[in-house]
Image (cartoon, rainbow, N blue to C red; front, side, top):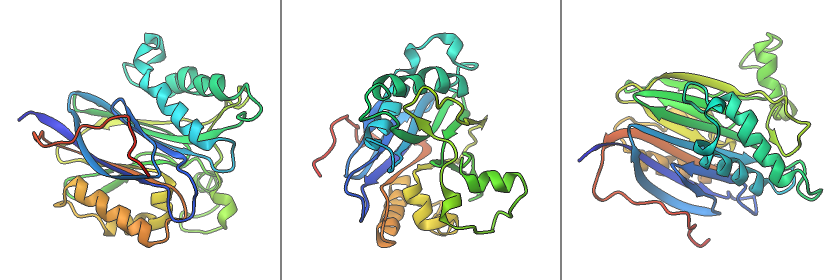
Amino acid sequence: MTDAIQVALTQHRGRVARSQQDALLVGQVIVQSPDWPIIDSTLSRSAGLCAVADGVAISPVPHRASRTVLEALQRADQTPPEWWQDGWIGPRLIRRQVHPTLCRRLARDRRTHGAACTLALLQWRDERFSVVNVGDSRVYRISRDGVWQRLSKDHTYRQSMIERGEIGPDQSLGQLYDDLEHMLIADEAEDDFAVHWQQGDWLPGDTWMLCTDGVHDSLGEAQLRALYHAKRSVTEQVSRYREAVLSAGAPDNLSLMMLRGRAQSLNSVRLSNRSPSA
């Protein structure tokens, strides 16, 4: 038995969408499936990386945008050391590796130019964590005592208005203001996007959740918290959230993963890059 990070994840295209535009990165494995069952695995406690990307539906080939961004992260360790920030993936690497890769692959063809996605990632090493996001995919930390923190930042027009004091956090202005203000776009000219970066200590008992807006918009933060129970395994908790989103109508793709430190089990499932049949 060795100390490890337990990971549980799932994906579904939802009740309305015809295709899966989200993608998940777990270690070095990318998942992009219309219906990925709840899978659990383990990752090294000493260092690791997980991420979610959500293709923007109104852009061309959103499924390719989300996958391309995660493929760029897969190769992050091949980039020049000066692109890292104290050994972490930060805004510099997003701007010099991830976005240029998206542009190189998709911006030069008029059929794919403008493909866009959001990104949220969790990286860890030596009992420290780093959260980076662009757009409105989210990373939450839940303490051993059940205290929730949203460590990502929504890059929406509404959030910008809240930060400028123009509206209150509970004030609703309509769907238009929930639109994305910043995202990753396959266009070299669209390089002024915001990148949120936050670091801290990975505390004993911490649980982490990464999800796309198909989860947090469908349920809302109040229900996310109400459905959480610290004594459940991450596999059980992911199952509970998946059922709740599907029961709520799942109007969008849903992608979700949860992580928690634990002793590694000999029965853990190994992920592969092959997606199950739909």
